[in-house]
Length: 78
Image (cartoon, rainbow, N blue to C red; front, side, top):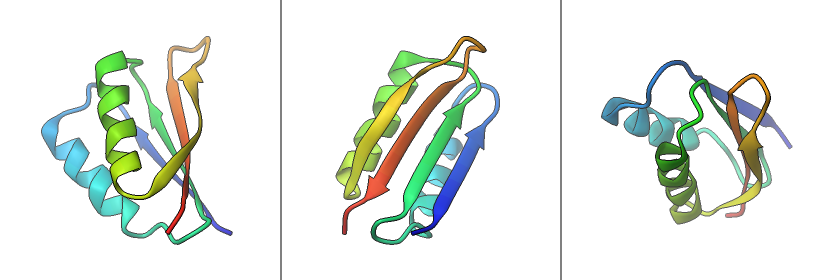
């Protein structure tokens, strides 16, 4: 099982969603994928979570931290 991490600095734009989708192609079954958003924005987090769910990922954990970052950890199902 491999671990992948994608950190997005600043606000999430349309091209970032495309990059996330492209990066998800590298993640194999049973691999962990963590996305770190520098700016915790509930709307963007929900869009990313939907994108992951639609691409056969299960959200293992999600939430913000004291430093203002938002983490989404997902596992590729199939």
